[in-house]
Length: 110
Length: 87
Image 1 (tube, rainbow over the protein chains, first blue to last red):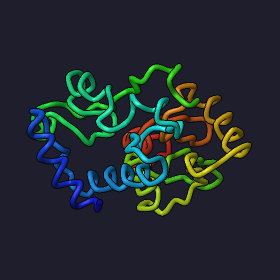
Image 2 (spheres, rainbow over the protein chains, first blue to last red):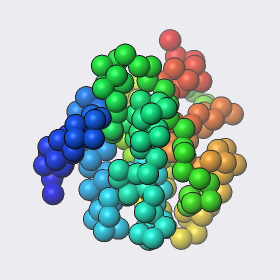
Image 3 (cartoon, rainbow over the protein chains, first blue to last red):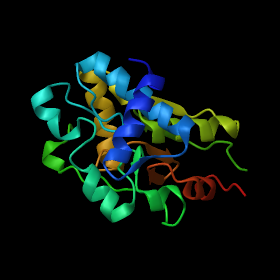
Image 4 (cartoon, chains in turn red, cyan):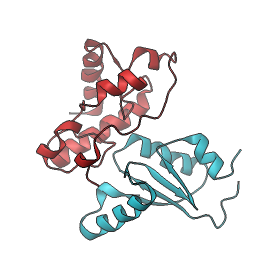
């Protein structure tokens, strides 16, 4: 899988979900590159913005799209990584706020 | 800009786009901070660096940036410029 191929797949997937990929394509390509690196490392596409356990059972909530994506988009207009966003966020009709970590502390590798 | 004698340390993930933005910000402004990609560390070294992060940012999220005594969590250009006394 190449980042460009993944971009094509996920941009269609995002539209099917009623959301979008961030329109900043170079930024999105960085996120996708990170996802593919994690897929090579762990065997699954763990969130590139979070420190993974590297054990699938412990990381199921942060396999992209993570379980926090939808509540984050609802509350902030974007997911934690700013990969998936609402149309409003993408078109600048919604303020771009830093999304706080929603993953419960007890699930994190800290 | 007053970067002389400043102690700047970045705690990042090599895969994280917000961390990449942060690294580029420093590079574009001619600053070369000490940087630790925590995901690339293993064993005791990772634990030692995680201990450092915990003291600065108990949430242990990335990037965690330490500029002298100021801790900035996440990429926030405004906060970075202020901490670095940049226009």
